[in-house]
Image 1 (cartoon, rainbow, N blue to C red):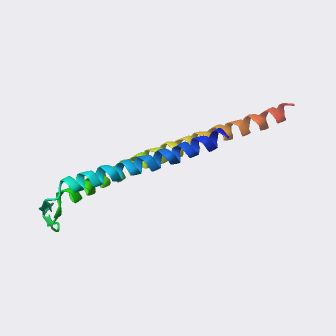
Image 2: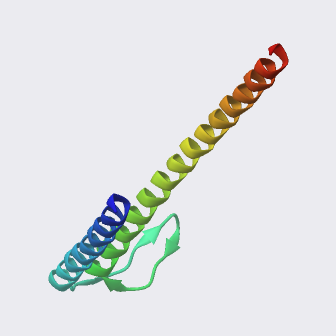
Image 3: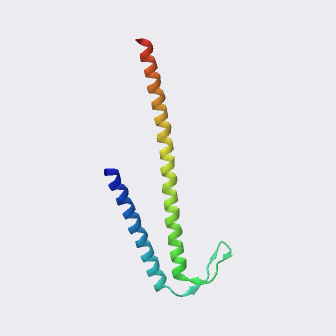
Length: 102
């Protein structure tokens, strides 16, 4: 039951966080309606509003942050699984050694 509650709270948190991001993005986009073009690494981007570019930058930053966190979590999970495998192998050896002694 505790796991269900945690899962539900996590879902509510993610939804609230996404709504907050959308509200901030709409607010930034509404108050920055001037048009501009950007030149990034020699590539000319089309003329869009400053608010759009700010929201795009914010969204890309959030996506990269999530991706970085996911990569770190996967690395930690891999190392924990490897460690668990070593421990299980050691326990198996100890069990067979105990059976052979008796």
